[in-house]
Image 1 (tube, one colour):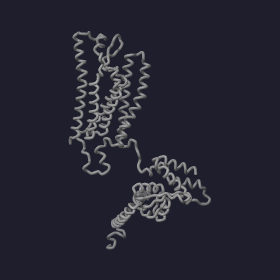
Image 2 (spheres, chains in turn yellow, brown; image 1 turned 45 degrees about the vertical axis):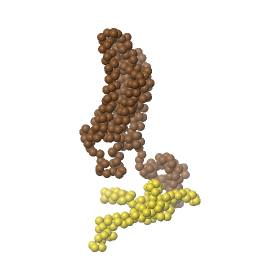
Image 3 (cartoon, one colour; image 1 turned 30 degrees about the vertical axis):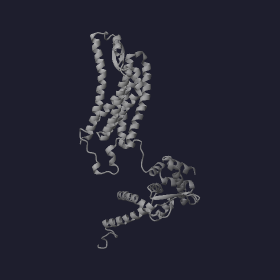
Image 4 (cartoon, chains in turn blue, green; image 1 turned 120 degrees about the vertical axis):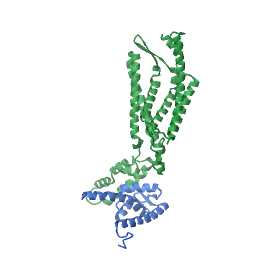
Amino acid sequence: MSDINEHIDKIMHELRRGTITIGVLSQLNDPQYGYSLVTELKAKGIQVEPGTLYPLLRRLEKQGLLESIWDTNESRPRKYYVLSSLGKEVIEQVSKEWSQIVTNLNDLLNLEGGRQSGNN
Amino acid sequence: MEIINRYVYAVVRRLPQKQRDDIANELRVLVEDMVEERTQEGVSTDEIVEEVLMELGSPKQLADKYRGSKRYLIGPDYFESYFSINKIVLLAVSIALGVVFAIETIINPLEILDHFIGLIVSIFTIVPSSIGWITIVFVLIEHLGVIKGEDVNLEKDWHPSNLPPVPNEKKQIKQSEPIFGIIFLIFLIVAFTVSNQYIGVYLVNDNEFSTIPFFHKGSLSAYLPIIVIVLGLLIMKEIFKLVLGRWTIKLAFYNLITNVITFAFVGWIMVNSSVWNPNFMDEMVQAGIVESGSEGYQAIKLIWEIGTQWTIIIFMLSLLWDVGVGFFKARKK
């Protein structure tokens, strides 16, 4: 059994790693700081380690998908991230690609939502 | 809190200077947020902080994530060659210095202590500088892609048509060739720098050795810095050849440049003055090997003059030949 779990963990780990970026971009239409994003994603069932998310936010900012601003009004100064106009375009396209992938994979797995699910 | 500061410091000191403040602030607030969220009665803050830090992972891991990729001075691609070239060079240096020490001791056994001190001094000056120069050459290879040439296209924007052909045997550079070259050049450097007075004719008189040097000591030492640079360039070329393992157009061009520099330098020395010992024949007479004006004298004089001239001519011709061979082999399909 543990062997099965190991394989499942491995595949799920890879899958999550690929989808985290999409999850992060999807939640940044309004400015958020790192930890609030962690909590929000967690509440929606997406588990991200802060140690993964913080560097990722930085990378996305460097790539120009996000913009950041330090809010020093609060007691703790926080760095807020928000989608740049480039980021908005990108996430819009990506979410279309994503639906396509979901449809295709559901189709392959014979799950509901696949193209042929209605016929079977 | 002290422990948070220590953690943050341990992370950011591994990161580039300009990102440090920003990441430090961000991390500190993150830890505070996480601690605050978990605070509950009955559990001490210290414990929670520890738990949070453990969850964030070791500072090294976190720093690696921030950095994205590992950074190398000399990466895994070239590390093996770097290591083996260091071994070759250090071995050659040790042998050359050992030979010099042996010659010095045979010629002048009474001053063996001085020779030994000289040996130690040479080891401490030549060994670190060799390693330093090899490292510089490899950093150039690693970071400026000096010789990557065709391989560089295999990383980004690669296309099957960029795949370098499997080098045919004639295009390949046998490992032994550059290795021998490096050893030979190191011997030359040691010979010129440490012991040019010992390159010459050896005489035995009543169990005592003496030499008549081929080179003129004064003029040779004036040229010494440039000689070392030129020999260094030639060693660099051999390293490129060893790492690359085949002739490419880029390597052929580098070969052209080094050989032209060497050619120009040797030519310049020849035009300006002679590095050859001008008193060679007189010293031969003084040593009693030949009698001035005798037939033997004429013969040796002829050999000396032709020999010194042709050594240079053959050397320069071989430089040109080598350039030709490089391009010829690089062009070959």
